[in-house]
Image (tube, rainbow, N blue to C red; front, side, top):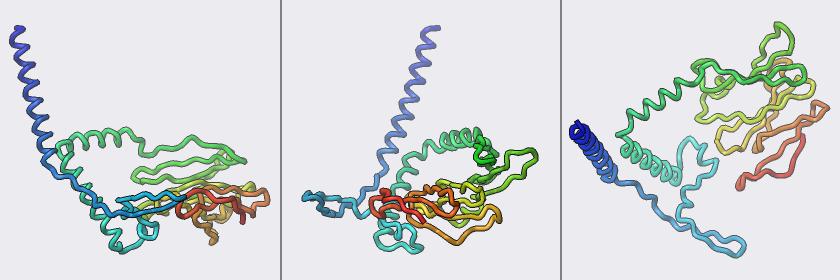
Length: 241
């Protein structure tokens, strides 16, 4: 009996090893893309350094352009080659990938809702509608039978954007005005928009290139915020308007 068991274990180990070696051989046979090198010298504080991959750095204007220029196309072509390579190299795990993805998605509550936060007579929260990728930003008065107000209908606002990130929201002390920030580039350079909550209408004023945070003064008219350096993305000195 022991001999049979040992033989079975050896056979199982041998078959597993063969499969692993076959997968490794297939993986190694795939040629990985190699990024080209284009030397770019940069001098700062008397020190000169060379960046061979500076050509991959795209400006926000290049990222948002409808038609890619030559540099952008080079970057897209290389990223496409990388994606093609990883797809081939990981092709033997496609079944496992699907299984893991389905399990993770299956554990997500499709109509989830955040814990409400109370502030100046209102309860603020976010909630998801099944089928939507973005939440609704809502509030209710803290009283019985109060009606829900949808402050931001993010699924609707995000339509037509390849990326849509909501930053901070700030409501004025009289509860009538809201400042909220949006990033559509994925560089955390937010535009701050305004909404009149008493009429549920958007206000035309927009503050661009900000950190995404805004604070109302007690006069319900003045807003404090910071802009960003377009290169370093660091916050500048606080401003107000």
